[in-house]
Length: 380
Ligand SMILES: Cc1cc2nc3c(=O)[nH]c(=O)nc-3n(C[C@H](O)[C@H](O)[C@H](O)COP(=O)(O)OP(=O)(O)OC[C@H]3O[C@@H](n4cnc5c(N)ncnc54)[C@H](O)[C@@H]3O)c2cc1C
Image (cartoon, rainbow, N blue to C red; front, side, top):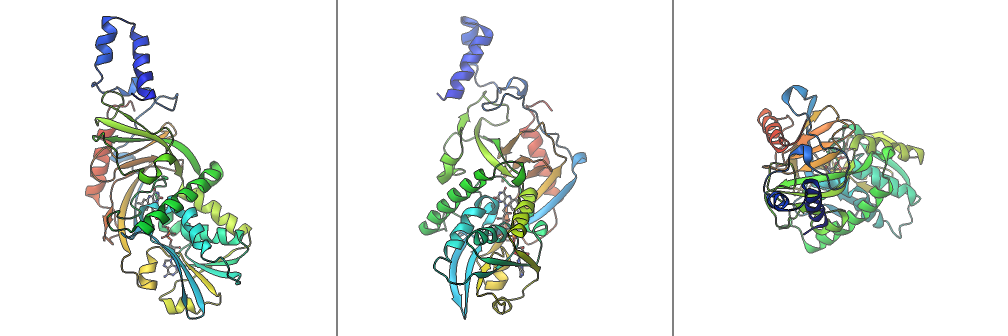
């Protein structure tokens, strides 16, 4: 029995007294906990349901996760006179992995005498690569088609979690060890930057589920989720049998990108807005070293046909400071609710190979309906 379950049982017994009555109530653990009486494992505050309905939707967005089933690419190659360092293909985990993957990419420059570099792309990978290169003494120019606020990185939900980074059946052991390394470095870096300046904070994560067995969610990073536990029937207010709990980081993409861009300028960096059509155009740049941080752009620029878009659709509601937790799961297909300071958002689609850019009304209706059900046991 977990510490949480022991405390729950003790609190129940204390509240109702000992004897036959206590025994009968403590035995009724299959009754769903009502939201009003639910004691949160790591917070002393009451727990409310987010106010989710069609009338409160402020905006819907669509983004294409730069997904590569065999896993993201970090490697260098010599092309003519230039060295190109690749850092792309992070699927649904680019915000999570950015510092670690970029550290691996910058490691590719060890021993080089050059000190001028062109970073292509101004999403999380381009910006964090650029900052780490500056710290290592490089003069950095970012060339990008889109400024940070117009990138896929700015569409991301922003939870720290290695979700949809690869297909474990297709990725190699070498990739898995690269992922393990990148995840740990990145986790360390994000925790170092925690706080309002970078838009990073720790929050309770609830994962309603009907499965009591171990799952792949935290997988190789299980130890990076403090307070991980599972609540059984009657011990949580969600509409599923079980609920996994843990703490994780919320990284607000807008704040994070703005702050890293500011740091980049402050350290003397320059951004040039420019779109490249092919590799040859890139190789004509003056800088001897190029970092390819173009996300989905790597498909066209470097002919990587393993890169596929995984369409995601987010529904934004006004922010609600009373919702101080996140949820993932609880129904069919990638459902999640993230409460951020700029918006409260719902997500629920991951569609590999779908290039369409419009939100789908059927999906919006489904995601709203499923979340209304998930939170129906909590007071609003
Ligand atoms: C709906 C959704 C939810 C997500 N949620 C999360 C989450 O909760 N947690 C998480 O960790 N990740 C999440 N992600 C994934 C994350 O957004 C991506 O993995 C990440 O943004 C990839 O960053 P990037 O810098 O590689 O690519 P991008 O942000 O796409 O940046 C690519 C850059 O390259 C430039 N570029 C491309 N082609 C060219 C060209 N030809 N010439 C010049 N410049 C070019 C672009 O202009 C841009 O500046 C989510 C993604 C989506 C869509």
